[in-house]
Image (cartoon, rainbow, N blue to C red; front, side, top):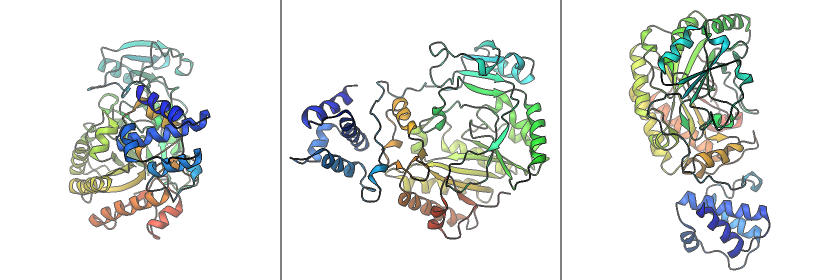
Length: 447
């Protein structure tokens, strides 16, 4: 990539920086500055006059101040993360798709005689079907099968063990008590920030076909639960409704949970609600939409329905008597963030008014190793241009605490303007952040 070669050449020959690590740190800072401000190296040198005489530490400090103008004096320097700079030659290495159609459907032998297997295969007549023994024994060949995180592959399996577990909430933060009902893995969408990109060992989208057996086991599990938990969701490792018109999972789940004391949360970015509209007077199912500004949806949430389609779907469900929920997660800080997110809040209450069960707020955060993955797969991303640092809470990259508090306070105030008693909570934040926003701020009573 000539762009990067020019940066490294400038660092080595013009700045005369010695040492592999030092060269990488200066080159990365320069790269991120040029990307963030959308300028060339020549423009940078014209706009920011480098000191005539400097040592490595002085140059690094000079560049850090330009790269992180909001946080420069408010964070520890060891919180700055400057991994080795390796950007893909490809631009946007995701596949452009208009309608999801898998290339291959792998079927475990044990899953062959299920009605759901037959239905899924019949819905994708153009896909090659391949019988395998067990997915755990599947030896994937990257040249033959895997190109974009395995999204072109569907695996139909019989799930026997991994059914219900606590949400893997990060340490030192206030947990919302969420439980995960594992009903599949992988997603047809391709959001640049998605943590599932870490799972490079996943050969495709995994769908269990023994839904009745799973619900029978879940029933036995729920009867034994004595801890105070109410909310169970299916959207942690997949999108709850992305293929619901094909799997028809909701046709099984909604009646099941209606007979329990537990709430089912179907978390989604989809507008795929046709099956849910068959039900009425449902109290124990909440469809929850992940929402973001049109700018972030268009630039970072690839292949997902636009915000307006998600809100229209939510409105339609409220007209059928459902309550809905919304997750502002991840909230991304950028130049027009305040104006854009304020409009999203306004539209949510415009469309759904008093039918909102709860709203969560969570700013952009991720494991450090994801940064290089995002850069490789989405070199034109905008989300990494923000001021993201290693947070001592959990060692993830986050906006600094002062900035997160500012974001939460503003969005919370916008929400309370429409509904003072709205149930709002923070996702993956420590107690001190909750207290800084409002000393009385606490988890809502999910009901």
